[in-house]
Amino acid sequence: MLEDSPKLAGLFNSLDRSAWIEIAAIAAVAVLLVRASQRALPWIANRLHGRARHYLLASVPLLRLVLIVIASGLILPIVIEPSLRNMVALLGAAGLAIGFALKDYVSSLIAGVVSAFEQPYRPGDWVELDGHYGEVVHVGMRTVSLVTVDDDTIIVPHLKLWTSAVRNANNGSPVLQCAANFLVHPQHDARRAREVLEDVALTSPFLYFDAPVVVSIAEETWGTRYTVRAYPVDPRQQYRFVSDLTVRGREALARIGAEALLPQVSVLS
Image (cartoon, rainbow, N blue to C red):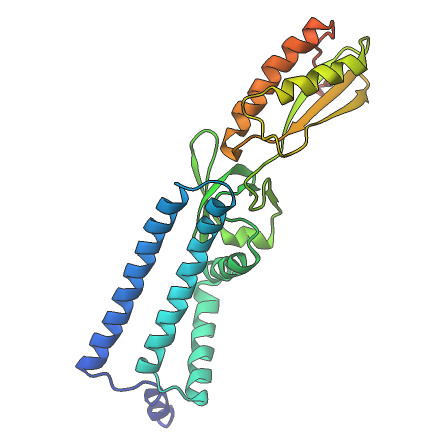
């Protein structure tokens, strides 16, 4: 044990006042740059539209990761003599301690690094994660923040990437598909019903005209299901868009005599 003490002490350089000042300066500059990027880039992105907004928002967590890695790479040679033996010894000791004390935390951090490169979700995406659906507003090193339609902020650790599926509704695209369902009595003119539902979608003020409008029909045991699939101009308008399709679609079906139904649901006691 006593023989190993000089070897362990030899891992670290002797830090004088100038070394501490250099470390503090690097850390301060890194913190300032991270905070400036987290404020400036979203501020600029919120004044843009379409793909430019999504790409700029997606660059925020990646830029933060790059700044942290650069700062760590500049500080490490000041503190530790950059030899292969020293680096192997340090990383081995750090990995062992972290593995026991912060297994879940480190797993979330690793998943955060993976998410920064694989990008299963980015700021501006609408995702369902761990049973919660909302817009991604922030991707941190350990967690992702969602804002739901009820204006609730949900914080989900990246750790869920290892065990849960991620449903991404727009996957970095500025458009998002919406679906409005209509359940009607089977005794009606199906061709006419499909036509009026297409007209309802095409005349919606929220419709994104560069994407197709599709009306699908399925026969159920209790009647006929119509599903109108279309895209709003902005993903944040999805609920207003579906509500508009639902209200005007029901009115249009009633005008042609298509009786609205509720699906038959069996309840087991």
